[in-house]
Image (cartoon, rainbow, N blue to C red; front, side, top):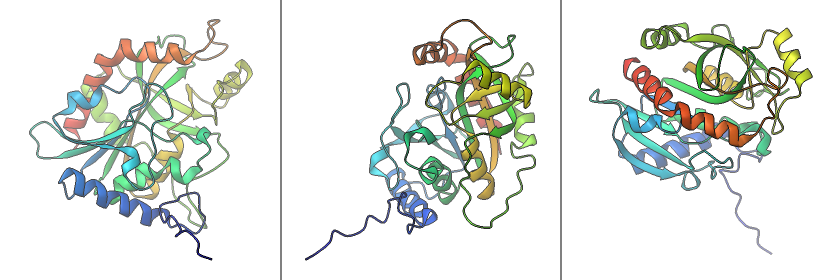
Length: 281
C-alpha cells in the first residue's frame, strides 16, 4: 500500500515549516516576475484595489493559487492575484497582494500571515497594510482614510509560535506615518481593533472597543502586522472607513455598503497610497 506524498506547502500541517513555504513562494514569484527581489509589499483591502494601477506599470501578474501556500480570493471585492509593479521610474518594485486570507476563513493563522512572510523572503523591507473598516468617530464619514497608529488584537491568537517574545512598541512605524502625513496633512490617526468575524460587531462590542481605546473596527491587519514585526519589516497601516460601526449609526451594516464606499473613495485612496509608496525609500 502506498500513500500520497505529503504536501510540503500545507500550512495547516503542524509539521510544515511556514518560513520554508514562504521561501518556496518567493522563489516562484521571482521566477514569474523576473525580479530577484521586491522592495515594498502592499496588501490591498476593501476599497484599495485601484492603488496598484496608480503606483506604476504592472510587469507581471500571478494567480494566487499558482504560488505555494496561497489561495483564491474568498471575499467579494478582492482580487485573486498578486502583481509585480514598477514604482514609477525609481527602479524599485512593489509586490502587490490583491487579497488576503482572513482569520475567519478557518485556514489558520499561518495562512493569514503567509503573504507577509513571503514578502520578507522576496526581499521586501516595508509592508503597507490596508483595510476597509467601521469607524467609531462620527466625524469620519465613509470614504475617509485613517492612519493606524496602534492596534488591539481581539482574535485571541498570535502568528508567533513558541517562546519568541517580539517587541510591538511602535509597531506601526512612525517614520512611515510621517511620510503619509506629508502627502496628506489632513490624515487622522487611530487605534484599529481586530475582531475575529465574519459577523459584524454588535453595538455592545463596538462600545467595548471604544472604552478600550479603539477608533476603528475590522476583521484583518493586526495578525499581519505582528508577523511583519517578527520578520523585521517596517509597517504602515491605513484604514478606509467604509461605514460607521454598529451603534454609532442606526443604518444596518452590509458588505455591499463596504464595496460602495470603497468605489466612491477609490481615486483618493489610490492616489494617496501611490504617492506614499513613491516616497518610501
